[in-house]
Length: 197
Length: 61
Image 1 (cartoon, each protein chain N blue to C red):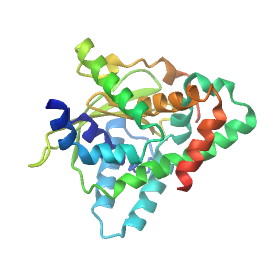
Image 2: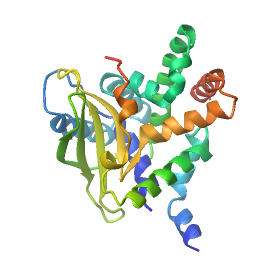
Image 3: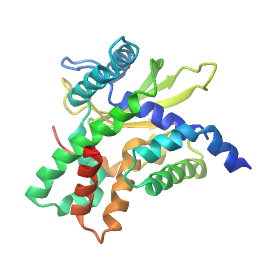
Image 4: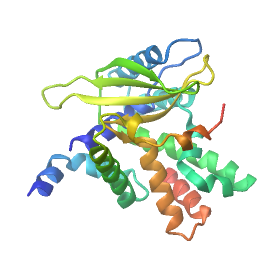
């Protein structure tokens, strides 16, 4: 049951991926981005500078809007235009803050890409492992890479020992909406409050 | 005792989860259920255990 620990450790890596402005294989994309993330995390930058840099990388390489839509589940079909616009904005702020607040806890994880599994033309799962150290065991990490545009791969999910980051978030959001009688405004307020605290 | 031991070993992770969750209970429940689903299906990979259909509807770029 080290999965919860691993889940959060790699939440960090989820937002730490390199620019992918040229066509490469998904596994190479993940390995190079992980390396760049590790360099950032182990750099001499201040905590604030490090967070800013990682946020920028996340904006470039993680499909924040796609993850946001996925996290809404079936509720995404009931949003009107204004709500959708507000949601995209507050979700992006929430996403970046949520992960950046975890960054300070960790540094320089060593990840090795093992293989890739093309699911269909839109998705490839890249399998990697966190190298074990004296204080922690080896951990399996899978990356869901959105490959529809071969010149701009985007990360849509991170799965740590079988625990999906996106799925957990989706069920959290659904719980908030359901406990407020299906009112999407409750989720928007929660997201906004989280980002501003 | 097992639960207490697990909690003690993962106290930092739990605190982090609590701090960064809008609905802490829902997050823990989701993690537990995903883990249980993996064990029941005796699967080693999330790609076998996870329903991909919802992802296929998401088109952003």
